[in-house]
Length: 185
Image (cartoon, rainbow, N blue to C red; front, side, top):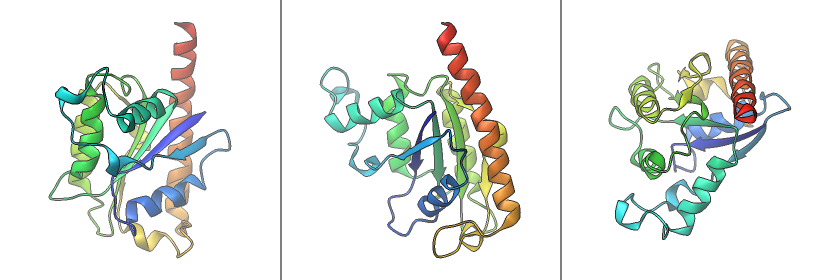
């Protein structure tokens, strides 16, 4: 089962990127998780440069999505929404449909007690408009995220570990169901 992990932050010391690395250590062994590294390289979306002559970086992004069985997104909150770079990546695939019916585990993490709740709501709204299969029990905000990890980017909070183990279990169930449906089509 191939999972594409996307951090909505480009910051080198990103809480969201650190959380992605921490939680992937808890993922079931059947999940092969690859982190998407070219988010900041995607050009601003424009229909004028989309289509047969799309930039190579866009083609690689779409290929990575097509080759994944599910997507794990973890985003920070900027100005009560998702970062522009993450929204831009979603805009690139609205028309081409790589996310349609794709199981997604959508997270927002923050060092604050709010957990990026407004960014999470914004992300969920965008994903639902795109006909994504959002795995609701595996999609949530992570409050005080830095306090739940150590310097080795390992979760140290037992309740958070349990929450993510359950989330991955739910994510896995939906992905398996999606894979069966695609095989039957």
